[in-house]
Image 1 (cartoon, rainbow, N blue to C red):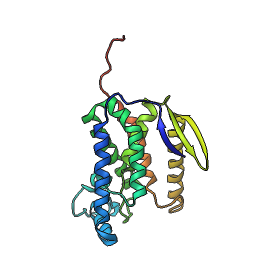
Image 2: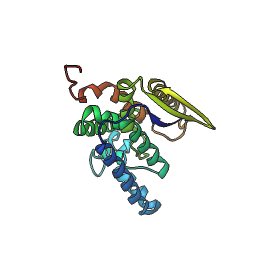
Image 3: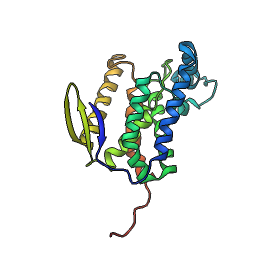
Length: 221
């Protein structure tokens, strides 16, 4: 299922969302100029490698990978997919939170997602990169705050459905939980994707988003 648009219009231009998208795309483009070996070296340094922290070592740059890994991607499809979801759902949360609060919320969800992946896979020596955990936090907040919105969804090969947001996002979350649980039982059961980072980010977004909302006016027109 691929979301095409939602039914909730933006009240203001989502400048923070746009900046995050541009930063991620620029960083990814820059990494492509390094060549395959250069990208692997970069991911080993700035990506999240859980084994560094579970084996009484520390990454050469300390705990920064819990944050820097959010801004790295492995392919154009990876970065475009994440940024499209951020564009689709992030603008409405930025409206409700304000620019600074939304930025902090996004980064915090990404860090909590990274910690979730670490706790589930503490011995993994494979670098994890991607904004998926932070974006999942946005999805989790949208799931509760805008649950009655509609999401125009493309289902291959040629079906279009206007799904309630809680159905689209709920199905996505359940699919991540299914694959995450399957991956614990059988390595790479659903592919080499950090499903538990997605789950951690989604839950984080659901749990903390209210703390970042702007105060609603106590009067009605």
